[in-house]
Length: 279
Image (tube, rainbow, N blue to C red; front, side, top):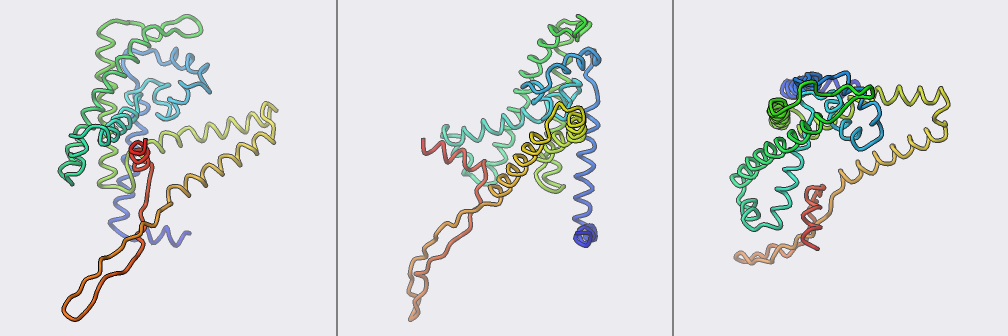
Protein backbone atom coordinates (compact mmCIF):
# COMPACT_ATOMS: atom_id res chain seq x y z
CA UNK A 1 0.00 0.00 0.00
CA UNK A 2 2.72 2.47 0.96
CA UNK A 3 4.64 1.54 -2.17
CA UNK A 4 1.56 2.28 -4.30
CA UNK A 5 1.18 5.70 -2.67
CA UNK A 6 4.85 6.38 -3.27
CA UNK A 7 4.46 5.46 -6.94
CA UNK A 8 1.47 7.80 -7.25
CA UNK A 9 3.37 10.81 -5.98
CA UNK A 10 6.42 9.95 -8.07
CA UNK A 11 4.49 10.88 -11.26
CA UNK A 12 4.66 14.64 -11.66
CA UNK A 13 1.40 15.14 -13.55
CA UNK A 14 -0.60 12.89 -11.23
CA UNK A 15 0.92 14.60 -8.20
CA UNK A 16 -0.10 18.00 -9.53
CA UNK A 17 -3.62 16.81 -10.19
CA UNK A 18 -3.97 15.40 -6.68
CA UNK A 19 -2.62 18.56 -5.07
CA UNK A 20 -4.92 20.72 -7.21
CA UNK A 21 -7.92 18.60 -6.19
CA UNK A 22 -7.04 18.86 -2.51
CA UNK A 23 -6.56 22.63 -2.85
CA UNK A 24 -9.96 23.10 -4.47
CA UNK A 25 -11.67 20.96 -1.82
CA UNK A 26 -9.92 23.00 0.88
CA UNK A 27 -11.26 26.20 -0.71
CA UNK A 28 -14.74 24.66 -0.71
CA UNK A 29 -14.50 23.76 2.97
CA UNK A 30 -13.32 27.26 3.87
CA UNK A 31 -16.30 28.72 2.03
CA UNK A 32 -18.61 26.52 4.11
CA UNK A 33 -17.69 28.67 7.13
CA UNK A 34 -18.19 32.14 5.59
CA UNK A 35 -21.53 33.40 6.99
CA UNK A 36 -24.26 35.04 4.97
CA UNK A 37 -24.77 38.72 5.93
CA UNK A 38 -27.86 39.63 7.97
CA UNK A 39 -28.33 36.27 9.74
CA UNK A 40 -27.94 35.69 13.48
CA UNK A 41 -25.79 32.57 13.48
CA UNK A 42 -26.30 31.69 17.15
CA UNK A 43 -30.10 31.76 16.92
CA UNK A 44 -29.99 29.74 13.69
CA UNK A 45 -27.70 27.14 15.26
CA UNK A 46 -30.09 26.72 18.21
CA UNK A 47 -32.97 26.30 15.75
CA UNK A 48 -31.12 23.55 13.85
CA UNK A 49 -30.33 21.67 17.06
CA UNK A 50 -33.90 20.48 17.08
CA UNK A 51 -33.85 19.44 13.42
CA UNK A 52 -31.35 16.62 13.74
CA UNK A 53 -32.66 13.48 12.05
CA UNK A 54 -35.25 15.42 10.03
CA UNK A 55 -35.29 16.22 6.31
CA UNK A 56 -33.82 19.64 7.05
CA UNK A 57 -30.93 18.03 8.90
CA UNK A 58 -30.36 15.64 5.98
CA UNK A 59 -30.16 18.52 3.49
CA UNK A 60 -27.72 20.30 5.79
CA UNK A 61 -25.57 17.14 5.90
CA UNK A 62 -25.24 17.14 2.09
CA UNK A 63 -23.93 20.70 2.24
CA UNK A 64 -21.35 19.83 4.89
CA UNK A 65 -23.20 21.87 7.53
CA UNK A 66 -23.19 25.01 5.36
CA UNK A 67 -26.99 25.26 5.48
CA UNK A 68 -27.01 24.91 9.25
CA UNK A 69 -24.52 27.76 9.58
CA UNK A 70 -26.21 29.67 6.71
CA UNK A 71 -22.96 30.32 4.89
CA UNK A 72 -22.41 31.51 1.32
CA UNK A 73 -22.39 27.83 0.23
CA UNK A 74 -25.71 27.06 1.95
CA UNK A 75 -27.36 25.87 -1.28
CA UNK A 76 -24.44 23.59 -2.01
CA UNK A 77 -24.26 21.87 -5.36
CA UNK A 78 -27.89 20.70 -5.35
CA UNK A 79 -29.13 23.30 -7.90
CA UNK A 80 -26.51 22.07 -10.36
CA UNK A 81 -27.53 18.45 -9.82
CA UNK A 82 -31.21 19.34 -10.26
CA UNK A 83 -30.48 21.23 -13.48
CA UNK A 84 -28.40 18.31 -14.79
CA UNK A 85 -31.22 15.84 -14.10
CA UNK A 86 -33.75 18.11 -15.81
CA UNK A 87 -31.56 18.40 -18.93
CA UNK A 88 -30.93 14.66 -18.88
CA UNK A 89 -34.65 13.91 -18.84
CA UNK A 90 -35.30 16.49 -21.56
CA UNK A 91 -32.96 14.59 -23.88
CA UNK A 92 -35.50 11.74 -24.01
CA UNK A 93 -38.79 13.66 -23.92
CA UNK A 94 -37.98 16.84 -25.89
CA UNK A 95 -36.85 16.29 -29.48
CA UNK A 96 -34.72 19.47 -29.98
CA UNK A 97 -32.67 18.65 -26.89
CA UNK A 98 -32.37 15.03 -28.01
CA UNK A 99 -31.01 16.12 -31.40
CA UNK A 100 -28.62 18.46 -29.66
CA UNK A 101 -27.28 15.66 -27.47
CA UNK A 102 -26.43 13.66 -30.62
CA UNK A 103 -24.37 16.43 -32.22
CA UNK A 104 -21.17 15.37 -30.52
CA UNK A 105 -18.86 17.69 -28.63
CA UNK A 106 -20.57 20.88 -29.85
CA UNK A 107 -23.95 19.66 -28.65
CA UNK A 108 -22.57 18.70 -25.25
CA UNK A 109 -21.11 22.17 -24.86
CA UNK A 110 -24.50 23.73 -25.52
CA UNK A 111 -26.19 21.39 -23.01
CA UNK A 112 -23.50 22.22 -20.45
CA UNK A 113 -24.14 25.92 -20.98
CA UNK A 114 -27.88 25.38 -20.53
CA UNK A 115 -27.17 23.42 -17.36
CA UNK A 116 -25.25 26.39 -15.98
CA UNK A 117 -28.11 28.74 -16.81
CA UNK A 118 -30.55 26.35 -15.15
CA UNK A 119 -28.34 26.19 -12.08
CA UNK A 120 -28.40 29.98 -11.73
CA UNK A 121 -32.18 30.08 -12.19
CA UNK A 122 -32.77 27.36 -9.59
CA UNK A 123 -30.34 29.05 -7.21
CA UNK A 124 -32.28 32.32 -7.46
CA UNK A 125 -35.58 30.58 -6.75
CA UNK A 126 -34.21 28.50 -3.87
CA UNK A 127 -32.29 31.46 -2.44
CA UNK A 128 -35.44 33.58 -2.43
CA UNK A 129 -37.36 30.80 -0.72
CA UNK A 130 -34.69 30.40 1.95
CA UNK A 131 -34.52 34.16 2.53
CA UNK A 132 -38.29 34.40 2.99
CA UNK A 133 -38.27 31.39 5.29
CA UNK A 134 -35.44 32.78 7.42
CA UNK A 135 -37.41 35.94 8.08
CA UNK A 136 -40.18 33.93 9.75
CA UNK A 137 -37.86 31.71 11.83
CA UNK A 138 -37.28 32.30 15.52
CA UNK A 139 -35.04 30.56 18.04
CA UNK A 140 -36.18 28.64 21.15
CA UNK A 141 -36.07 31.86 23.18
CA UNK A 142 -38.16 33.76 20.63
CA UNK A 143 -35.26 35.68 19.09
CA UNK A 144 -35.58 36.24 15.31
CA UNK A 145 -33.03 34.61 13.01
CA UNK A 146 -33.03 37.74 10.81
CA UNK A 147 -32.76 40.91 12.96
CA UNK A 148 -33.50 43.24 10.00
CA UNK A 149 -35.93 41.56 7.58
CA UNK A 150 -37.15 43.15 4.39
CA UNK A 151 -36.60 43.28 0.64
CA UNK A 152 -32.96 44.32 1.09
CA UNK A 153 -32.22 41.17 3.08
CA UNK A 154 -33.97 38.97 0.50
CA UNK A 155 -32.05 40.54 -2.39
CA UNK A 156 -28.71 40.30 -0.58
CA UNK A 157 -29.33 36.66 0.38
CA UNK A 158 -30.33 35.67 -3.15
CA UNK A 159 -27.22 37.29 -4.64
CA UNK A 160 -24.95 35.74 -1.99
CA UNK A 161 -26.33 32.20 -2.25
CA UNK A 162 -26.46 32.28 -6.06
CA UNK A 163 -22.85 33.48 -6.26
CA UNK A 164 -21.84 30.75 -3.81
CA UNK A 165 -23.48 28.02 -5.88
CA UNK A 166 -21.92 29.39 -9.09
CA UNK A 167 -18.51 29.31 -7.43
CA UNK A 168 -19.02 25.72 -6.27
CA UNK A 169 -20.04 24.79 -9.82
CA UNK A 170 -16.84 26.39 -11.11
CA UNK A 171 -14.77 24.48 -8.54
CA UNK A 172 -16.37 21.20 -9.61
CA UNK A 173 -15.68 21.85 -13.28
CA UNK A 174 -12.07 22.80 -12.55
CA UNK A 175 -11.52 19.62 -10.53
CA UNK A 176 -13.02 17.52 -13.33
CA UNK A 177 -10.81 19.18 -15.93
CA UNK A 178 -7.56 19.66 -14.04
CA UNK A 179 -7.86 17.40 -11.02
CA UNK A 180 -8.65 13.78 -10.22
CA UNK A 181 -12.12 12.29 -10.61
CA UNK A 182 -15.49 13.96 -11.03
CA UNK A 183 -15.47 17.35 -9.33
CA UNK A 184 -19.19 17.45 -8.50
CA UNK A 185 -19.08 14.00 -6.90
CA UNK A 186 -16.01 14.94 -4.88
CA UNK A 187 -17.72 18.09 -3.59
CA UNK A 188 -20.71 16.04 -2.42
CA UNK A 189 -18.33 13.51 -0.87
CA UNK A 190 -16.40 16.26 0.95
CA UNK A 191 -19.62 17.71 2.34
CA UNK A 192 -20.77 14.36 3.72
CA UNK A 193 -17.36 13.31 5.07
CA UNK A 194 -17.02 16.65 6.89
CA UNK A 195 -19.73 15.50 9.32
CA UNK A 196 -18.27 12.00 9.73
CA UNK A 197 -16.00 12.70 12.77
CA UNK A 198 -18.81 14.32 14.77
CA UNK A 199 -21.14 11.44 13.86
CA UNK A 200 -18.59 8.89 15.09
CA UNK A 201 -18.05 10.76 18.37
CA UNK A 202 -21.80 11.06 18.91
CA UNK A 203 -22.24 7.34 18.32
CA UNK A 204 -19.50 6.54 20.86
CA UNK A 205 -21.13 8.92 23.35
CA UNK A 206 -24.51 7.25 22.87
CA UNK A 207 -22.92 3.84 23.40
CA UNK A 208 -21.28 4.96 26.64
CA UNK A 209 -24.47 6.50 28.01
CA UNK A 210 -26.55 3.47 27.07
CA UNK A 211 -28.83 5.42 24.73
CA UNK A 212 -27.69 3.18 21.86
CA UNK A 213 -27.53 -0.58 22.32
CA UNK A 214 -24.38 -2.39 21.11
CA UNK A 215 -26.54 -4.75 19.04
CA UNK A 216 -28.14 -1.80 17.26
CA UNK A 217 -24.75 -0.26 16.58
CA UNK A 218 -23.46 -3.54 15.17
CA UNK A 219 -26.54 -3.86 12.97
CA UNK A 220 -26.03 -0.33 11.62
CA UNK A 221 -22.37 -1.06 10.90
CA UNK A 222 -23.28 -4.23 8.97
CA UNK A 223 -25.95 -2.38 6.98
CA UNK A 224 -23.51 0.40 6.07
CA UNK A 225 -20.92 -2.16 4.98
CA UNK A 226 -23.45 -3.99 2.80
CA UNK A 227 -24.62 -0.72 1.24
CA UNK A 228 -21.04 0.25 0.38
CA UNK A 229 -20.42 -3.18 -1.16
CA UNK A 230 -23.59 -2.94 -3.28
CA UNK A 231 -22.66 0.56 -4.47
CA UNK A 232 -19.16 -0.55 -5.45
CA UNK A 233 -20.56 -3.62 -7.22
CA UNK A 234 -23.07 -1.53 -9.21
CA UNK A 235 -20.48 1.13 -10.02
CA UNK A 236 -18.03 -1.43 -11.42
CA UNK A 237 -20.74 -3.41 -13.23
CA UNK A 238 -20.61 -3.76 -17.00
CA UNK A 239 -22.72 -5.52 -19.57
CA UNK A 240 -21.30 -7.56 -22.44
CA UNK A 241 -22.88 -6.34 -25.69
CA UNK A 242 -22.66 -8.88 -28.55
CA UNK A 243 -21.27 -7.47 -31.81
CA UNK A 244 -21.60 -9.37 -35.08
CA UNK A 245 -19.24 -8.46 -37.95
CA UNK A 246 -20.55 -8.93 -41.48
CA UNK A 247 -18.72 -11.35 -43.71
CA UNK A 248 -16.78 -9.71 -46.52
CA UNK A 249 -14.88 -11.04 -49.52
CA UNK A 250 -11.69 -9.14 -50.37
CA UNK A 251 -10.09 -10.68 -53.47
CA UNK A 252 -9.61 -14.36 -52.73
CA UNK A 253 -9.82 -13.89 -49.00
CA UNK A 254 -12.84 -14.03 -46.73
CA UNK A 255 -12.91 -11.81 -43.68
CA UNK A 256 -15.43 -11.02 -40.98
CA UNK A 257 -18.32 -13.19 -39.98
CA UNK A 258 -17.14 -13.18 -36.39
CA UNK A 259 -18.85 -12.36 -33.13
CA UNK A 260 -17.41 -10.71 -30.06
CA UNK A 261 -18.61 -9.07 -26.87
CA UNK A 262 -17.88 -5.45 -26.10
CA UNK A 263 -17.89 -4.54 -22.38
CA UNK A 264 -20.29 -1.63 -21.84
CA UNK A 265 -20.20 0.19 -18.52
CA UNK A 266 -23.62 1.42 -17.40
CA UNK A 267 -24.08 4.01 -14.67
CA UNK A 268 -27.18 5.63 -13.21
CA UNK A 269 -27.04 8.52 -15.69
CA UNK A 270 -27.63 5.97 -18.45
CA UNK A 271 -30.15 3.86 -16.54
CA UNK A 272 -32.66 6.69 -15.97
CA UNK A 273 -33.15 7.56 -19.67
CA UNK A 274 -33.24 3.86 -20.52
CA UNK A 275 -36.00 3.24 -17.97
CA UNK A 276 -37.87 6.32 -19.26
CA UNK A 277 -37.78 5.04 -22.85
CA UNK A 278 -39.24 1.70 -21.81
CA UNK A 279 -42.22 3.33 -20.05
